[in-house]
Length: 411
Image 1 (cartoon, one colour):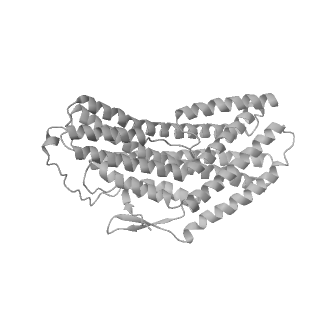
Image 2 (tube, one colour):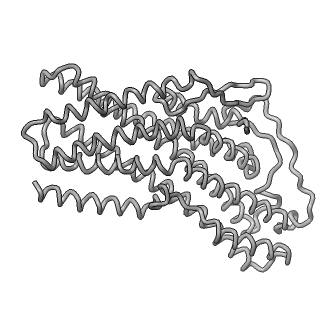
Image 3 (cartoon, helix red, strand yellow):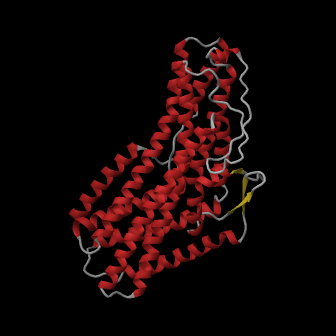
């Protein structure tokens, strides 16, 4: 069995998100740091599954209590009751499915993806500054997501508790609310954050390849920008960085021309990126499908309550609808950008062929690369049912508008 070992850098970037996922049962492993080799290895043990088991019990018990609590509703329409029940079912089932799938069935896949990304990083990074810049983008995205999630949740928790006390509700309803609404929301949102940051890292690697090809087309590079043999540490742990010298000895590179080995390295890197994309789809496809269904039910139920029964809970519904709409757009936008960056490679390869300045062996290698790009297309899907891109976002908007009109008319 392969033992995953990766640098401190990528661990440091994802560490804030890892701690949150750990608390909510989405990371059934722990990290063991090797200070001598500046490496981090994962550790799987029974204690690492403690939070996972606890949250599975909580979600299972909360699901039953919440379903029973819905039957006590009075003076609500049948449409509103059905929408609320569907929302509860989708919230709990998606959370249970995510925890089981990510932390039990596929618990080693996330680290395998990180390990593969780290290996590809060694081949496509040229300078330490570029690696630092790209890691900072991921770290900033993680921190901004956590801050936004914390602010929204604190406001919702304080407001909901205030409403319950003001309405003189029983205290068990407050606990049920925190478990059924807040906990499932955090679990599903953290899963999306984990997934989105993997897509962001993949997108940055495709973008780096495109920049390298663009420089070769414009003739502004006098040494390789794609394949690099060096040892780099993270942007967070670079106090004792050892960088090996670049092997630049060919006349072709001094003349600002591509070599056959450079193009072959590009093909190998793209093949590894394609494998990473397939691994992401296989690991996150099924939970993503469940999460999308959860978001759709939140949007339908929340919008219906806002339009028809705007009362003291209207602010809560608006907050959930707004944040879930932003999540859908962010998922579609990130995946759309990553797919476009991957598809741009084929355009740049064709431009290199049109330049006509490449050697015969390079032309042959470029044609093979173009064929590889056509066959091994990059696409992020939810279990193969649909592609998550901006077209999907517009489809979701039109679908929600149609269902809202039908629900209002049925009332």
